[in-house]
Image: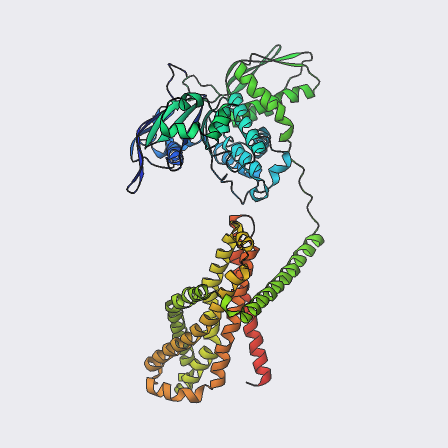
Length: 256
Length: 377
């Protein structure tokens, strides 16, 4: 990765816990500009918790999380407000506002933050909807009327509304059929290249990992067990990672 | 790409030159407002090929690329030949990505507004359809009730008792307090008039008749509609949008049997009991007021009560409660099943449930008054 440049996300000695239950202890992770980092790990290894700590939804118990070189724990709310506009997030179940149409969902952050005229906002919203590969008639639909794959695309469109530099995706392909999942993987790769995004992808989908990510961080035992490409992690010989990557599904994904 | 606000940040702009325009500054979302105004006042009169020079551009995101695309097609629309130069590879990718999708930004034509007559028709028809659906629902509930009557083992006693607890027992304090206060208010307002004629003792008739025959059942029904009818709607509505109702159907469990009947039967038990309790508390309120204001003692009050109010009146009052209970439970559950799609629809249906239940309760109360009046009781 970029050797001299500072990482876009730098996590040091992160500790998170729910009550007495410790999720992470001493977790270190760097994410570099313009890379796609996959975050994987077994169930309960704290993937989503780590994601929530990175997007400022969860205050860490200890340690530091830096976004764009700024420590988010020490940040005054006014700065956090601007920082959030540089992040795009899609949630596991889409979390589109069900009372708004897809176009209104995408336009909402623009109305809130950009101060542009209605016409340009409408155009930008429809542009984003087209960019994620949704047909133009989807713009006027309400989220409950969309299929699973369309919902995920619409969520990506909303996450991209403010042209964020950092895109966080939580299980984007979960629950999708293979065709939709492939199409979504390709979409993420294409948008990442075209828009110069840095992508953090939490997933269980080994095919997505192989296709989308440049680097994978494997979580376990409260920290990062290893980072590297799919093949590098599979070859490390750690029993947890071995079971994850060298099972029948892992082998099939790596042979692609 | 957007990056940190650099020290050398310049607002976005277009500089006119002899052979075209020079783009400069940051063409990004946070500056698009300024740029858009700028574009409005743009003019270019010369003919011949024109160059857009992007080599001094500091940043470009999709919104900037959209405006650039718009500028280009605006100029090309005037029959000019436009060349774009100086975009680096990264910015060119964004520009081309946006160009390939720019056809989609045109707003879809708005649906034509309907005429007043058509809207009136739709509005009226939706109410007819609504009434029809409610009647169907009542019918379905009746069928489910008959099925359970044939096989009483199928009744969900646990759910029924839990309804009696949440709708009945838990409502005792609020209903007790409000009907006590209602008794106080009636005794006070009526007492002022009675005192003027020296007819203090008739306070017993006044309080007992108004409370027992009319107000206690009505007040109880209204409170329960607000407390419990809304809860029924919200519960079933949420289950409906999370597909739990469908899950029940696929498991071979009739939602009417599991969700509606225990609620309706539970409320049929709870509401008459609450009404009787409201009667007692209302009379108590009246008695307290009669004692302090009119000098009618507790003993005197209770002595006169059997003469003041007949058993028929009491039965008619309490007898309305099961009807109100059925209205509240059925409207509440029906509204829950009508919820579809979104979270705010559950809210809408809950509001509608309370309004409709109270409306129907009062309409039926009026019907009972007319009916009993006609029968001379």
